[in-house]
Length: 179
Image (cartoon, rainbow, N blue to C red; front, side, top):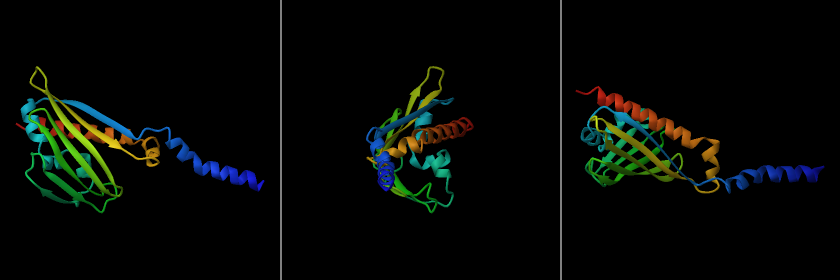
């Protein structure tokens, strides 16, 4: 009986590690939304990281979040750093790593707390014939084995997708309410 119990306990402990072997370590999510403003106007707004405070779900999670900036906002090399006592916000920084004028901005995301992670995000703008803009916001992440077990367990892709979609809805409302 004791032997069967020990085998059961070992299998119970080993199961998540075995399952993680079959779960992806990389993931990418993106969401798009049409904004009724010209693409140059939309891009000129989103290229400034400081403007994310006005539409990003994550920036709104902690109004007492401490922020610091280095470089020139809207240019490659600009860094926006944050630190919060709220564990859902944590500590990290976002850097503009590539900029294609009027089309795309790429960010490096360096999360420090509550867990360390280096990921990437991007935003693109595509002009639509009627004068509006299709904006896409994407996130590219990686979780090493065995932490990758959290991707399906915590439904990470859906959580990020929901936050990106809410952020784009906020961006749409913000930009379309401007004259």
